[in-house]
Length: 184
Image (cartoon, rainbow, N blue to C red; front, side):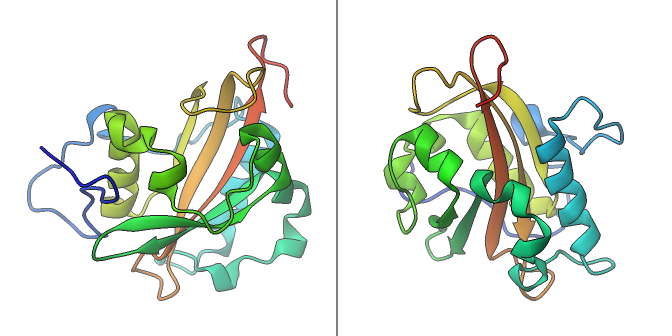
């Protein structure tokens, strides 16, 4: 399927009539046992889940930076724009800026990370979040250009919705590691 470079083929939050195919993310759920997660990534997910109103997605208004100070340097937020669906970096923590070796705040995701549109697994990850409203976790090789010593990333991406249902932001925490698993 041909795609404009700035548009992702993603559905918004809803309940499809037939099971959707999200590639390697099909059937994905955040595991109950998160003991193998990096403590900062686990803390981020547990905070996101705790501030969510019952039966709803949390919105940016539920995130209190003073409650997550240890996460802030690794935190990033994307604004979601529709028609066409695009993402712009609203906030990028200093550890992320240092890792990617440039400031991303205010930039469009498709301009700074074109790999997203070429990598089916990344596209499917975003599609799953938008269709289901559920967060995702990943630990594995970095996918886009970073400091050459940063080879592994662990992150959790979670949707935010001001109205509790319509995803208007993605909030995430990323921790980088070297090839030997040492954290930066």
